[in-house]
Amino acid sequence: MPGLPARGKAARELGLPARGPAVRDLGLPLPPQRMPAWRRGALLKRWRYVGIYTPELLLCVGRARIGPFPRYWWAVAEPDGALHQGSSIRREGVTLDGPTVRVEAPGVRIELELEDSVAVETISPAGGRGNYAWTSKRAGVQVRGSVRAGGREHRIDGPHGFVDDSAGYHARHTVWRWSAGLGQTEDGRRVGWNVVTGIHDASEAGERTLWLDGRPRELGAVEFAPDLSRVSFSEGGALEFTEWSARAERTNLLFLRSAYRQPFGTFSGELPGGLRLGEGFGVMEEHDVWW
Image (cartoon, rainbow, N blue to C red):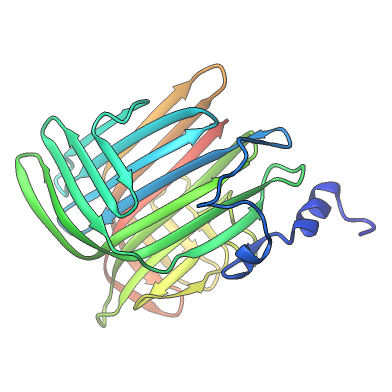
């Protein structure tokens, strides 16, 4: 197309961005298919993140692979500020296989099973050169099992899960802010949200989503406070965030430099559509990475 920058032209030719059923119509290699380890000058990056968000505890278990290099992590946050966490380049007791989520570590045991549910898929241009990134988000996932941490045993049984599966050929330098959470409105309806800037954030066909009683709808642009204390919605409303504790990690290697912080905590305020939160639990996140 005359006048269209080369990067935008490549994305247009791929049909990007896309959301929902249109993602699979593009014919691009996507999970669970095998994706090439290298595409047009970019390494494949992929990860799975499972969050459990309840009034009694917040936790995450994740695995990532940047090219051939793996990473595993987990964290359990409690309302009193206690944080139990671990990370390694080896599995070391972390299992994320299909519906199964398990962690075995000193003083911590996580044994959870996730029910299947419909995901919201998004695919976006990434890093120029006709590359792309894909993500699949699920909120309010039914979870059953138990968590032991800090000498206490917690039973988990309900729609408390959030699942992020992502893969793609992201730009060498990628910066994002993100929030995911679950809760109830003041009138008792179940809500979940997934909002972001810096990745999959096109004005249309982005990954920003609000789930109301399990039904997803796309949201418009958002803005995060620099200290992650607030996220505001272009359609109206804002959520205030109160931190319990935060998982943070800095990496400075020859091929990888990363500054990452994910606070756990509670939310209050109003979602788009005049939905006043009665209670909300989840995470904020900021990540600045050269990969």
